[in-house]
Amino acid sequence: MKVACVLANGFEDSEFKQPYDALREAGHDVTIVGLQAGQELKGDKGRETATVEKAFTDVTPQQFDALFIPGGFSPDRLRANPVAVDFVKAFFEKDKPVMAICHGPQILIAAGAQKGRRLTAWKTIQADLKAIGGADVVDQEVVVDRNLVTSRQPGDIPAFIREGLKLLEKEPAATR
Image 1: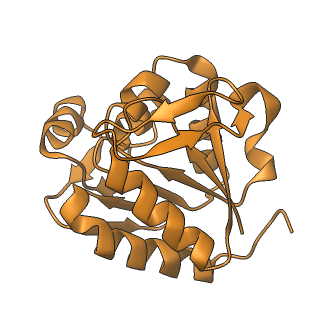
Image 2: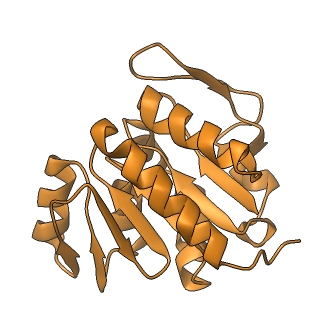
């Protein structure tokens, strides 16, 4: 499957790298999509770097089967960009698989995609989701709600990867 990984500076190192590697090892084609193609991004902890392969303006959601949203400061930076928010929103409109960890659901809020969903996130984002309303927010290591997999924090990465890969196995690849 073709997976878009939306990323900006300040991503949580492990929440990007471990799922990214697991997706690729499982045979998925993962493309890092960001604000500017060729931009070198740095993880919040300084352990990982990544290069934006495609800008949001160079791709469409229709070119991808699934979406991966790492946490850290990245989702907050991306949600300030309407093109990034529209990109994320399109995956929900087409019921494509979405995997978001930690602060990842911040961009779901901006896209209005939390409404009617059961999900989890980092504890402060859980509070935001509850305050905004429209979502059933729980404090669990991983939550699967139809096409959405969410987790809270780096300690939840193994469960996040496990359930994300299961979700992708169930979905037919639309772009193949």
